[in-house]
Amino acid sequence: MTPPYDLESLMRHALALAARGRGFVEPNPMVGAVVLDSAGNLVGEGWHQRFGGPHAEVFALQAAGEKARDGTLIVTLEPCCHHGKTPPCTDAVLKAGVSRVVVAMADPFPRVAGGGLKILRDAGVEVQVGVCAAEAHKLNAPYLKLLHTDRPWVHLKWAMTLDGKIATRTSDSKWISGEESRRRVHELRGRVDAVIVGRGTVVADDPLLTARPAGPRVAARVVVTASGDLPERCQLRESVREGLVLIYTAMGNEGKFAGWRADGAEVVALPANDNRLSLDAVLADLGKRRFTNVLVEGGAGLLGSFLDAKAADEFHVFIAPKIVGGDSALSPVAGRGVKLMADAFELAECTFEPSGRDVYVHGLAK
Image 1 (cartoon, rainbow, N blue to C red):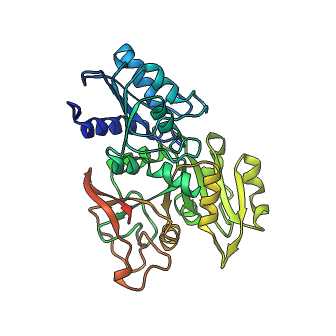
Image 2: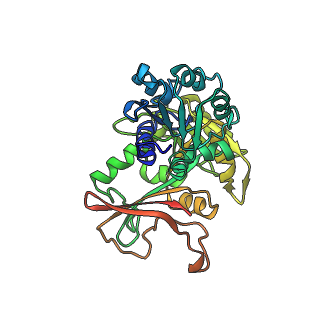
Image 3: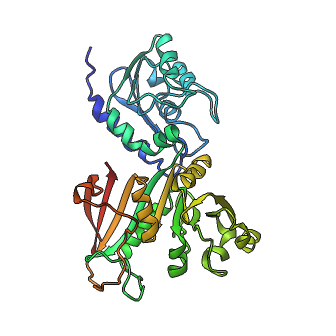
């Protein structure tokens, strides 16, 4: 029998609940859930609120209480069936006595991977999978990428003038974007696992790379420098005790960082080719740390390297209504680039919105 409620609308509500966990739950997936009683009334809802804490189903079923019996659980991801940091959600679902479970997508995590759905079906629960599946995959794209490739989801960010410059001919760059755009960037820093820059940015801007005010996560501050030639004194080194500073450099440069290490920074030496580090090796190490989202903030050489390597997943670009001109003024993306316009990198699902006086462009890699 067709239920007297709109499953897709309810699943989208569960997805909106799930998104509240962004920045709090990684490397776990974001999950939301709602519970309907036997008459189809919404009687409970919840979301996964923090890593290591109860899952969405538990919160939703607790809120519903006895009203969940013979009702329907609508959840954005397959309920887990293993003992991790919390008991299996399938136990809570069966104990609550719901008669139907509607799931947006199965969980490809190896210890789940259809096992939760099988347990429910074997217990006589009606199970439906695939409602708003595309939206669920999009929501948890970083989780899915880390799970399948052991690499984090890579965000690229830059601010530029209307004529496509990130600094004047004298290398002055403060400030291109306005306060609202800078606020958005700090929010982004506060929900990623790492903020990544190259040596040139450290030398030119002496950045702190922290989120101000603090967000749900404290990102590692990462510097990629094949040469290992960093300033002896800078804000990153002076603030090492406030949060992890991670330096990737070429093998043989370890001695250059004795002082940084003594101050508390972590140095990782990687093979280099033509004085360039392998970005895949950098991302592999970040993946081993179970970093889910990383933010590359520049400079132009590093941003260009990520594009050349086709290693970018999501873009955040702020365009200020300013023109600086100058043949020698830097553009945001260097690297090799493409030969033909037909080969230009295009964004999918691109959106444009005001950000104070700036324009915020957001899109995904095709």
